Length: 110
Image 1 (cartoon, rainbow, N blue to C red):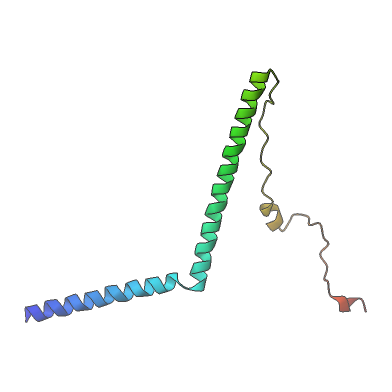
Image 2: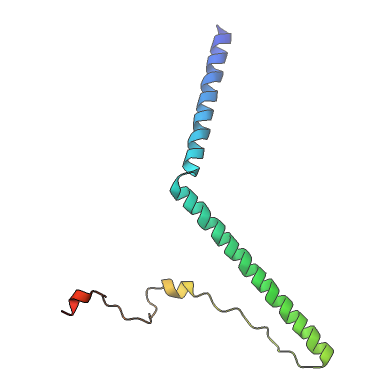
């Protein structure tokens, strides 16, 4: 009797575990989840590229200083900065936009 109860409980637990695993994997494969994963990867790649650009910029400034020192030229005091991100300004509703806010309906003028 206890042996049957043990195997029944073990089977039920394995079934619940397998069902949970399958449902979790199915949720990961929905279009929304795949899109979110793609966005996360793209943002992560963007951060890596930005870090790489900053490292390259720092290396350039250092090498220019070394070359300027070797050639006896005056090096700039501050390294040039990367341009500010434009996306934040584009998403700001209070920011002025270059185009006026009006409709582009062609039937409006006639």
